[in-house]
Length: 155
Image (cartoon, rainbow, N blue to C red; front, side, top):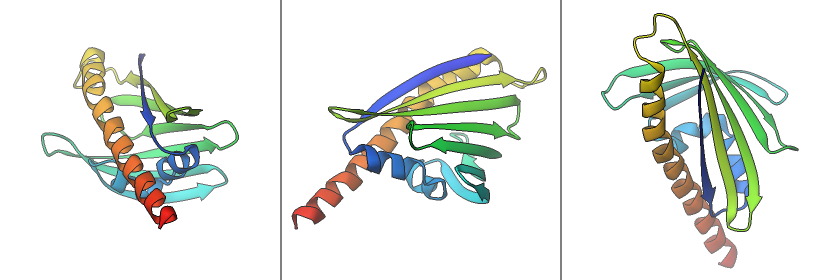
């Protein structure tokens, strides 16, 4: 099983970070490579949705995820299915208020299918390269929203 963890501190209120990152339908605004997100089913704190994403080589990938959030604990869990080469990808999101804003941590766990066209080492290398970039994009976009909200409040 592959595992990796990445964190970023976002200079924005916890509530804003929670709201924006858990609004799955608006993920194409946060994740630059997400072409679209279609909500398939929602019940309570669990959402099933389809993501369409384009990679660096222009290939289009699509998968269905199920995401459950726990607002009281500041945690979210996603389980991706239907992803080529993987038995599954599970992502745990942890949100923590810190003096500098909000720390967002992603913990990825995955298992490859026996006939996967790539190795665990290749997947880890790709995630180690791409995830910090994605997190930095999210950080920048949410910090911009926080600045805009602050400017509006000040008038």
